[in-house]
Image 1 (cartoon, one colour):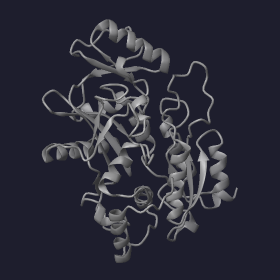
Image 2 (cartoon, one colour):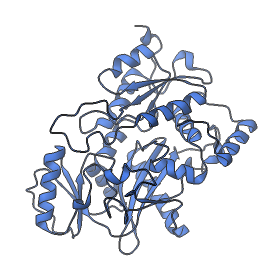
Image 3 (spheres, helix red, strand yellow):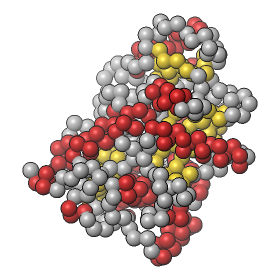
Image 4 (cartoon, rainbow, N blue to C red):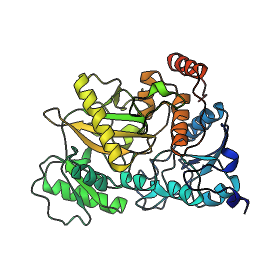
Amino acid sequence: MQYYEYQKSNNCAPADMKRNPPWRVALTVNMKGVIGWPIDAPPDAGAEFDQKETVEAIAAALEADGHWVTICPADHTLPAALLDLQPHFVFNIAEGIGGDAREAQVPALCELLGIPYTASRVLTNALSLDKTQTKRIWQNLGLPTPRYQEFHTGQELIDPSLRYPMFIKPAREGTGMGMGPRSIVHTESELRERVAWVIETYKQPALVEEFLSGREFTVGFIGNPGFPGMRSWPTLYNFDGYHFFPVLEIDTGRCVTPGVYGYKAKSLYLEKTGAPGYLCPADIPAGLRDQLYALTKEAAEAIGVCDVARVDFRLDADGNPFMLEINTLPGLNQELSDLCIMAQAEGISYYLLITEILYLAAERFQLPTPSVSASRLLLMTALRQLEPALVAR
């Protein structure tokens, strides 16, 4: 096949890519409303999948930067599609279909075919979807996360060190799936009932952790370790290579699932009745903000995150932050997703957010990125201040 004429190792570019962009970009996605779910699927099956408008907005941002974009469904047709398209790069937002490490499916295929891709690598995406395994790593490193227990049958003895109330969720889902008012339990009978429901409904273990009563925050970032001097927008990043967005507080007190940032709450647009409050920048002391940033960096580096991620936190009754989970493929809906809300609060346009993710990944794969010039820096600064409508909805 012609494809194998330019296939290189994972850290090398195809021969015709040894130049500056534009590139042929495959945008790998799982789109809502495309897959028919079986009758016994969970009620929120496919909640993680992206809306058509989100996919089109990402494609428009990449095309505005001069690239050729092809939208590729991340299903059984993807291997043939990538072999036929021979993309220079994969911009990956696919959640995967089936399996307990499904978010690693597209990265694994890219590794197999030698195609550079955005966001985290295979093992990191597999780990981050498994909330229990991620918490074990954090716990072993001494990072603060609520005490927990994983239930496989629902008949296990309850760890006597755990204290009520507790919070129950599927161990290997995202986007608040399986989370609602009944996720908070106060007695053993409530715990047993909810654990059994999660195991039966989602066909996976249930994660039980102590419920923290304090405020809820999420912290997003873009970047990778290393001096950012040769990046397309070097002044955006700290000297250690990261850019942290303003801390976002999630006020669930008034939302459709009070006290719980679950799927129903996450799916509502900001002004809709029942949507949670999104407070960004969060009204918190600088010391707490810096602590959240430091913990986010440690949480991400513990599992090898690349390019972009978001870490969720809750405070305990004494105001101490605890890490709940990490999202290595954070949503990119420009109207609704937490990461986009943070970027907008800082004045970073959607176009710049998307293209920075692309070029951070390109840097990791040692590929040529736009040259650092005074004119480009001036343009970046102007775009950040003016927030132009470069990408149509």
